[in-house]
Amino acid sequence: MKEYLDLVRLVMNEGVRKKSRTGVDTISYFSAFYKVDLAKGFPLLTTKKMEWKSVIRELLWYLSGENHIRNLRKHTKIWDAWADEDGNLETAYGHYWRHFPSAKKDKNGNWEVTEIDQIQYVIDEIKNKPYSRRLLVTAWEPGNATTSKLPPCHYTFAFNVSGDKLNCHLTQRSGDIALGIPFNLAAYSMLTHIIANETNLQVGQFAHTIIDAHIYVGDKGTENEKYDHLEGLKEQLKREPLELPTLNIATKPLKDLTFEDFEIVGYQSYPKIKFEVAV
Image (cartoon, rainbow, N blue to C red):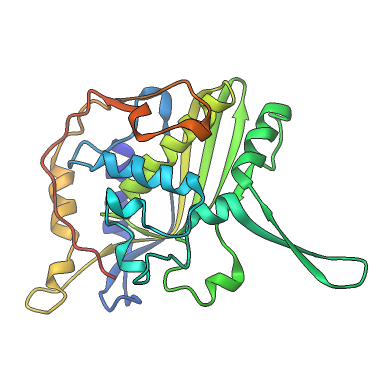
């Protein structure tokens, strides 16, 4: 994944030090961008070991539309820090993907709220109007964003059909280069594969814009030292990327997909690098 390593270098070399909400400083770069050709392999990082099973679990949870983590928690605890004691998640990406609230006034001037399944809308549009420039999904609901403990980071994505290939562009307001971005890259690339299968297309490119691309830096000798991500990223820059694996997904309707329908073939990587999450 040369593209990822180039992103790391860009933020390291051209970013500026900033305070952050977490209390841990970051090296921040404004408006980073990269894209990868999904036909060349599934972009799962090889310069560190990735927990790819968690990627599948989380993505299937998003696609379920659930707004609690009871089922996800059985397999991974990646959202535990953000949920309440009952497992409810104030900002659940998938809930907005599948149940986005849409309000309009009736003839008496009263507001009526309906729900929009954005994923199904995109699938139907691709099948019927593949030339459409409106193949967009959002997880950003302004009312929720003003009160949520963690408003959506990867808040909108759009599909684009070029010939027989499906492309995807993700826009992210905030991106943790060491921890979050490798996961986002794999998850949305996997989603592109799923939607391509559903619409009888081949995968094209995945593109990614990160408005605030940052690396956490914890000063030595301070309580924030454990959150420093620089050394781990520098270690990855020393590692030569290995051949990318292949993603196989069972030929089934999206609604019927389960964890067992996904297979990552030929994944090899360097050892895991531990990065602490700054909450």
